Length: 287
Image 1: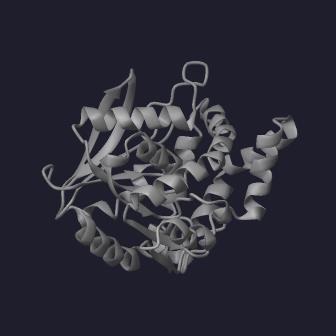
Image 2 (image 1 turned 180 degrees about the vertical axis):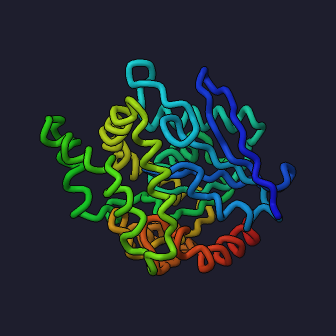
Image 3 (image 1 turned 90 degrees about the vertical axis):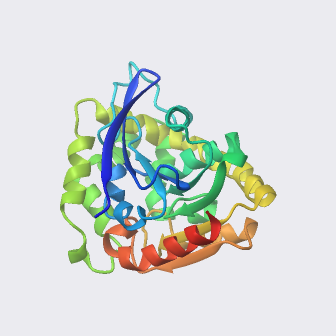
């Protein structure tokens, strides 16, 4: 049975939690979670890859077991979360790595790659968007309204994403079989989202999410220039980032491996058995 270590590191005065598995002298895979999750979303994947790869899965600040300072003490932006992640990797002595990105983890991963393209050896995207085509209009209508004008009405719309019912919806919508998804997932996420003051943390990141689409053209140039190996394992029935977001990688990375699997936003909960052979084959070929 693979050993999964649960560790903390002090980075820029913040305490960050991360899960670590696999031989430390093996090629590294950095796993970056999305909203409203944490490294907990990789709990079943890590043991299945730990025989051959070194893996580090941090909780972003404000998520999981990492610190969640109030917005009066920390300015929550994707730039800031990227800097913390970069410094954590530096502290761990990780200079070259593949990355696994999901949801919020994608804009953090893209920023890391743009800062140091030579450091990134390969990319796995599990519903980690990089193209306008990936936005599901029905979902992002509320978010775009909040980007456009921050009012009590638009804030109320995005606050719904902090509810238990919405978190459950994210996990179950598009899942091939709802009974495969452990209810502990949405209960776990919601309990951490509900910490005092964390609503303002999440609202700040929802607002800063508006900085991500303007970055996409720069990301596309990075893809075209460096032709980084990329695997998209994508829940085709994701109600947030649709399958066109996966297909679009081929526009800039003709050799990208794109697999639309039967599942939703949290694909690993219901389609782990289908995803793992694709991930292992990709890592074996490129790391």
